[in-house]
Image (cartoon, rainbow, N blue to C red; front, side, top):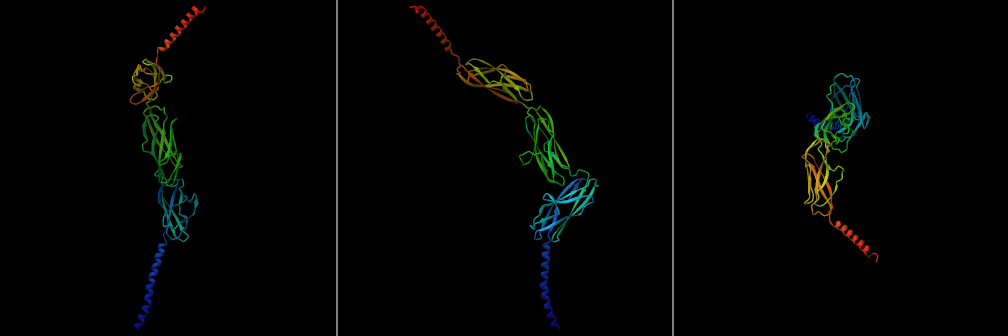
Length: 396
């Protein structure tokens, strides 16, 4: 009896020991083949009644083979509208490769909150089911509120700048889309007549009139502002706007023109060529014009010319020259007594601590000589002598 029982035990035990690892192995394989998940980066957001928002859906598939997954909305509040989008159109299925990596933004849920929806918290449940029966749910929580908790922003880092007229100003601004979906913003400015304003996205070289900003993203924009050359002193405000289908964002840029300082040296006719004689003082009328928009004071007149030349002025300092005004000054140029015939350059400069201008006069020196008069006298004498000879001896 005992021997029989021992014999039976020896037959059963090996089978039981053999079966146990086989069962364990099957269980592990099933567990490793069941990894499939749908998710979204921002499952909870705030929205306003009447607003349409989107959620980018990510998928991961570790089942060991590519899977088609049917998409559906399991739970949607009454009156709300939602559908899935992909590749520019409406979809109801996605294919997920078994790469083991997350397929980001493979599908997008577009969700519209009806006008008049009461404030509060609402849940939307999404489901993805593969052909193999694997499923994954995502619950979205939307806080409906009339307040602009998710309002986007358009701001300038340094909104106030100053410089002289003719200066091009550059403002660094940032456009932030705080909505749950991508927005297209048109860019514009309300500048006075004659001003030029352009918008250039950071990192790019071409100006644009509009741009797209993804949900939750920001975009740097350089706003270039060029006022007219003849602008007078003062403060100027340039409102700029970024407008989408649901938002109008504004910012004010302020420019302070401190004035332009400029002077010009010329002659009343504009002719910068004069004739002169060696060691002979030549008077030249100069026009000193304030071409800026700010009065100039203490303008000093200086000169430079060839060695041993002398240049002086009837007024070497102009105490006040009003914006746009012209004052005539006489310069006296005396070439060197040994200057030979030819062209020379004499420079006249008008300058103070904020403005300067130089005019280059071409001085043509003509050297006087007595040979011309002597030649005339000789001709006269010879003519008289010939006349006397003809008169005395002509009849012989």
